[in-house]
Length: 332
Image (tube, rainbow, N blue to C red; front, top):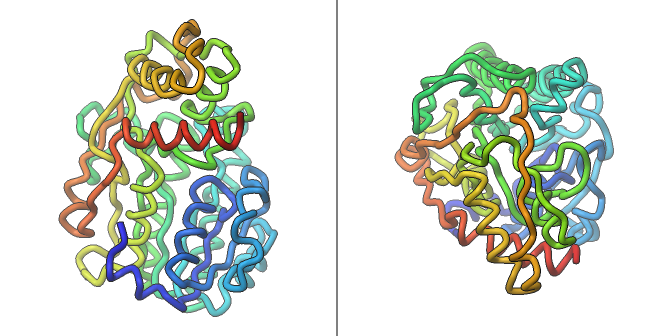
């Protein structure tokens, strides 16, 4: 995945909001590997300090503990920064249905605070985590960036509002932005615990403990599961592209393939069974569909390939092997 253009980030100062989270901490590690000076801003509401263990002593890394809902914190974190990777957000559709107010405060007000801070600090480019939930009730597959439907959750609304604000900040203040619509990202460091844990790490831990995972619905709902290293590649391409046409755009960040939940559990059991053969016999159970869930998600990545030269290296089978190995080594 190493590309010559990424090395232009060497000695650049980059702020990663939500840098102690799953995606953010992986981005921090990669940026440091490339020689960047990295500032992490996180309030540890969903991120974890242990995600930073490998880099906390790095002289090119600094940590600011603070909340993006505080504009003064956002300004302080953005001082002297060349680029911002904005990963901080409250994810999860179910969480947003339970508490839409807090989701909006973090994902909309916090996002606006960061845009203002980026503008005032003269940041060169603001790359932010958008979401495939923006496609809402759009029926067409694969999902194409300029065709979206009606949002199906408060979370989806907040992520769409982010895109609208980013557009305004380009037009009104000439702040370069790129939005990355993440499609079901998974991989090392993804938290398996908590009420809103993502499906892959949650199922992995349950299977490791010989507990029956519960699939919402009949298992035919499908997703474009995207391994973390594909997402890292997209962020680096968004930071470093010199293609003017590629900037101030929104891109699907995915593989361009889909897997249903029955297929997913089969793959997980297969990969885990090499460590513990009994896992192959763990029963899969079914529960009701979740409110706000999109039945099927499949991305077109043609736009990213054309404008950013995106080249996803990991299909779900390859990514799951690496993810399962990491979970077994670190959490068993």
